[in-house]
Image 1 (spheres, helix red, strand yellow):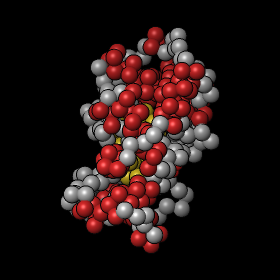
Image 2 (spheres, protein in one colour):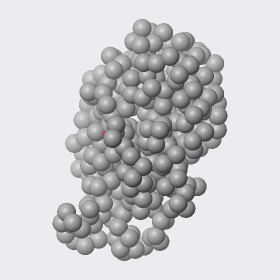
Image 3 (cartoon, helix red, strand yellow):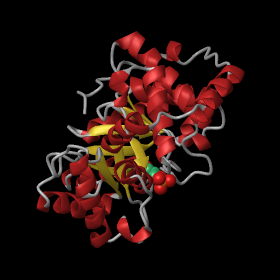
Length: 318
Ligand SMILES: O=C[C@H](O)COP(=O)(O)O
């Protein structure tokens, strides 16, 4: 991951007078959604890139040490070994960007990755600060970050205070995020905006900008638990904020769409959007992650098809 965004002082001017052309944003989003995807080797190249950007996630109430171990194994070996060999990769050369779990499963994830000797290559990301609602005392939320970092997480996906955003209390949001960033220490902070609960696209822009001012290293669309999660329209607004923040400060902050991303085609659409709206660096896992629990299976199926010329039966890609 890139070096930390040090953030800047709260500057209300950066969130006053936000002008968003909704018609143009919707048109652009629908162009990305309906565009013909790349094919054959170009598609496989994008899909392998997408794998390296996946934060392979499990966020369930019934998560156990054993399913977290399986998740970590899959993140270390995302594609069947024979397929990988056909594509010219060594075993373990291609891995997911991170694994993402609840705080109480971080030590299981760190332990599993260590036992596979992958703990230096694959970071453990943890959701924190009262995920998914964030409706907890600030003291509790900050303590949770510290405990999670102590257990071995090097990326912390915090949830923002949606109440503050909806009430237009942007300075409160900034102050909380500053404290969260400090609590993260050397861990990178990803700020989940929960765009489906922010009410307006203007709020999506403002929340993105405030999080970046406070020093977040990534802005992330959603927890995956809201009614509306990673949509292209919301993403275009967040990307505009990323671009504006870069022009103003010179800092590149990462982007993580999450929630409902399930297909190889989705992954190609997201990567294309990053390349065209930002630049090539924003298609690498330093600045781009796909938060997904069920995307990798479809990508592996498409890679299988490319290598063998046929689709796998269910038992061939368990
Ligand atoms: O942060 C990641 C999301 O919770 C994953 O959502 P998903 O299960 O819809 O892929």
